[in-house]
Length: 376
Image (cartoon, rainbow, N blue to C red; front, side, top):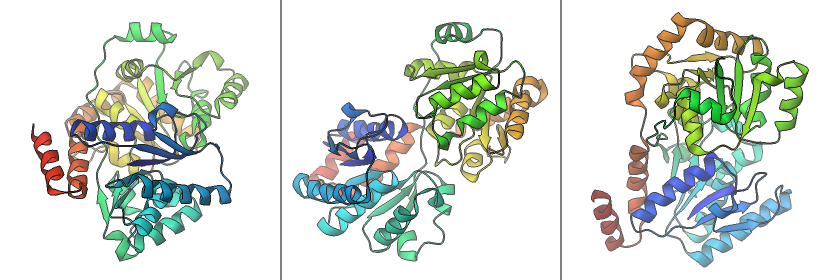
């Protein structure tokens, strides 16, 4: 059973879907459960959504926990793998109450979770509610270094992996389809239009670099504010909010853009950034450990530019360096060529999860079947 806090559209649901599809191919039935509804729902991606509300009060959070424990008692899954902090706590509590093995996954550093969730997660993990605690990067794992030993002993790093991606259209075709100007440099951002992604700072930075276009895929609560800010800065014609675009169009844009920007306030290990590095899109990232980890080559060079995500002028300098300075751009591209063979693949990630889950499959016959199908 896969558990998400809510039925959100985007990375969490894609991550669950990737793992679920792999396990189904191995002959393991899976269910996908969300505790409550998201701002932008992907309802069809979940088998069960336990509460219909989009925002929960504290009593409703408690109700969601109780409902999930009852759900586990009824469905009797062989294991629960949780994504998102609140989901991890729910899975761990269910593990303590029912004995069902729970695997929590951390996709962001410890200090970026809410205070109450942090406290509950530490308590549940220390008491043994989690069979394993997966961190998607070493930087995320390091953020739990001060937790009790009983918690830290369960930590395991399984980095995210990139599926094989390839462009099926050139720059001119891609830009024409998405309505982007053909002759101007384009900086691309992909993700939710939300505070975490620092999208308002991105607009402020682009306003400081003449002639550069900002293309943003995705949607979210800051869309209206973004449009208003672009108008205030006089750059409405240079800010293109593309909305939810087709997956292949997103890939084509990664291969065609002049730079890929992700100046998030925090991340765990961004799939979009990994895919951009794989596609050879020159990255501009926030200067935080987890982002630097993704774009550091084996020789210790940065295959991109790390900047202060709260300083529009610093972000603007990074944009100008990659888009307007050929020498700097060429060096970054050379570093990206070094980095690309070391970007983890989706297959490697799935094999790691398979190794983690195999011992939890009930019965030796089930585990043997899982192993033989994997070998095939």
